[in-house]
Length: 138
Image 1 (cartoon, helix red, strand yellow):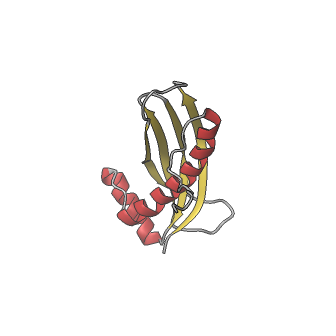
Image 2 (image 1 turned 45 degrees about the horizontal axis):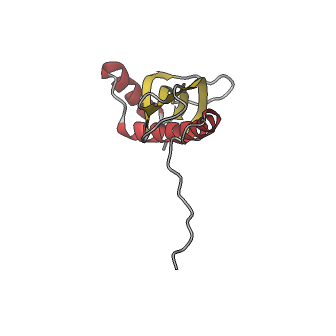
Image 3 (image 1 turned 90 degrees about the vertical axis):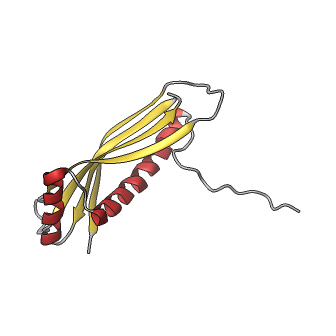
């Protein structure tokens, strides 16, 4: 049974390159796992904790702006499962499917939330489409 036991952002970079865009803006968000390593948490007797380093980039094309976040997710597994995940990463940079789903979902949730706030400051559209409320048609 897995648990996300920590989430840290280490870098935030956001910029707007163009104020006015004539046509539609294409928005894409990409999370990337850049490293996996064992993590010992001082003072806590937690075993099987892995630190997944990530980059998260939201691009506004054509060259309108960009939001970049990097950090790490602390993910706890059984000792055996953690070792398996680590071995696969060290051998050929493969991320275990179950771990990838859990970790990438955590990254998406937290980074999109932070990205919305940054996009507002930069006068960029949010990196996610919100549901819209409309009046009922008579």
